[in-house]
Amino acid sequence: MTINEDLFARAKAVLPGGVNSPVRAFLSVGGTPYFVSRAEGSRVWDEDGKEYIDFVQSYGASILGHANPTVLAAVGDAASRGTTFGAPTRSEVELAEKVCSWVPGLEKVRMTSSGTEAAMSAIRLARGATGRNKVVKFAGCYHGHTDSLLAAGGSGVANQGLVGSAGVPEAAVADTVVAPYNIVPTLDEDTAVLAIEPVAANMGLVAPAPGFLEACRAECDRVGALLLFDEVITGFRLGQGGATTWSGVQPDVWAFGKVIGGGLPVGMFGGSHEVMDHVAPLGPVYQGGTLSGNPLATAAGLAVLSQLDDDRYTALTATAAALASGLAEAMASAGVAVQVPQIGPLVGIFFGDEPVTNYDEAKASADRGMYPTFFHGMLERGIALAPGPYEAIFPSLSHTEADIAQTIEAAAEVASTL
Image 1 (spheres, rainbow, N blue to C red):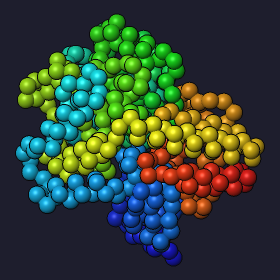
Image 2 (cartoon, rainbow, N blue to C red; image 1 turned 90 degrees about the horizontal axis):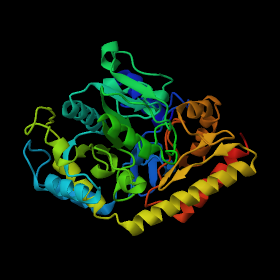
Image 3 (cartoon, rainbow, N blue to C red; image 1 turned 45 degrees about the vertical axis):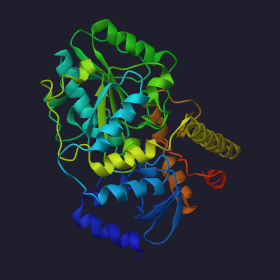
Image 4 (cartoon, rainbow, N blue to C red; image 1 turned 30 degrees about the horizontal axis):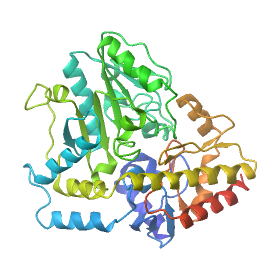
């Protein structure tokens, strides 16, 4: 028995499925998960000592790569002064100032400890600010595991073969309406918020159709509903202004996570002064958290954002483009029908002849059953992708030209076996 297998057996005795987040259990791809012992840059090493080029990168949180020296130094310095206080700190103010200065229209934020909390709080805020209850979301967009948003929730539930979750009463989703991505829904005067991933990265990687985000903005304006951009993935990965600058469309409410925590647990929601002044203690919408604005997370987030500028985003996008084009060519040369979308620094992979534009098409790709074979073939060759067909691929600023070349070579070998 390998060390990974032993740890997994022990984990299953004390953790549901042996994991603390379902996709890590490898149920959708089969096999035993690898347990990471350490990571650096573009690489992770498992408990058996095997090295992988890692394109999971904590599902996009590690934009600089693992164990970035500047981030580690900032966290160490912060930890030397205490790890949590339950009181305000300078670093949370500085992180909020930095984020608001980068995103057009974002004037105030409130920090949380996860992306799920950020999305949940943003929905509560939208309902409180409008006095309405109805939430409209899109199939295949994942907004965390809060009850009202789990319906047709993309990778968070789709990788488990589920459409929702047991334990969510009908009343919790009674005011949730699910629409197909890339088709503008018709809202009514009962709609509080239209929630969307501006680039859908939880059903693989699906781009918004030309004019789609603009039309969603206009439809919200027509009925007085708020537009929520869930940028837990796209925030500060598509660029300094996230999807707002990338698309030219400004929402009313944002949810952030991942990149702004530098690998530590973090979330953030925000909006204009007018909207955010509904949040307690200024207004009647309650949100709080003992670890919100944690000094280690804010120090890490500041250390990450301090290293991101236009040149680095250009370099990261070029890496993603090289990976996407190389994967597509390698697979096509082996006669494998595949789509490899690339949107800025994000990459996806779908098996099939046609581009994917919505969740039904993404599911059809996953249902072809080719991803598990591809995943394990790549893993055997030292390339770590996410263990589920509904996840994006996350190049980091630590991935080198040699890493990309090695990945494409491995894909060509695997493609020849499909």
